[in-house]
Amino acid sequence: MRRIVLLVTSPRLPAGLLTATAWDVVRAAPVLAGAESELTTALRVAGAQVKVLDGPAVPALLDAAAAHDTVVWLAGPAGDESLARELGLRLAREPGLAELELMYGSWDPPGARLLDAVAVLDRMLSPGGDPWKRAQTHQSLARFLLEECYEAYDAISAGDTDALREELGDVLLQVVLHARLAEELPEDERWTVDDVAGGLVDKMIRRNPHVFAGAEAGTLEEITANWERIKQAEKARESVLDGIALSQPALALAAKILERAHRLGVPLPVPQAQPDAEAALGATLLALVAQAREAALDPEAALRRTTLTHAHSIRTTELS
Image (tube, rainbow, N blue to C red):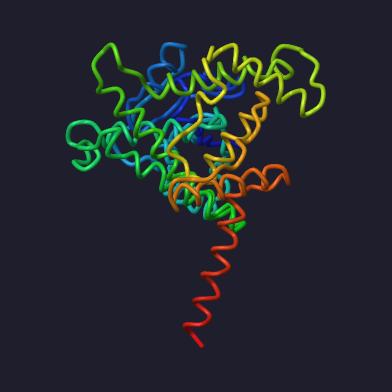
């Protein structure tokens, strides 16, 4: 039986990066396409017979199938669903003409849609793109990054994985947007999303020798301690408190500082008389955070949970 092969390839991979089976087919059979592309060029260079059609594709494919055992159609990035449907209906009405076969010459690798995200943001921040985004700076976007992270946190707290997927997309938007804005910086300050990803990859490899360098894994505590040793050697920080995000909520900040102080063996200051009510309240709260840390509790999460429970009771009262 003659066959018409719809060859689908990933637009996110270099043209010509095909499976061995796909190469065998395109070298042995005539190839038709709807437009010139990097792939048609690559196939011609490799010796394939490629013809770009000027008219309707279905009649041309049927004519080619009548003259050859196999004919290949180079499907576009969207897969040419309408053409496949029309061709399938035609062959169903006349089953003796040919068989329709779908062949994947290449697949998107994991993470391929990240390339689309980069391309979309590049388009939006290029001339003729979105005026609002083009007017932004790292400083003007800072609050949006925090908001998106908090919304992702809310989705995690609610156990809503569908919402989490969407909210992480919004966080990713901020990451890619900041990286694209950095391409507009002066040359000596400029960096790209590849620099961001490359730095992450290098860091993960350096700090996980039990995964990438054949080191013995040990216990979780040993892995964490080794991570911290490597991190300290990389950063060469002057203080155990260096690197703490000072803009995080006060309870979380207090917990992080007390955690770092514990590593160094620095005890919590002995409570003393405070000069005013605000200082006294601050000292009391810090002592409570220390108690929470000793009990392996997260003071930020505890206060959030209790506050939201109280908020729920207020709403219930309003409705009664």
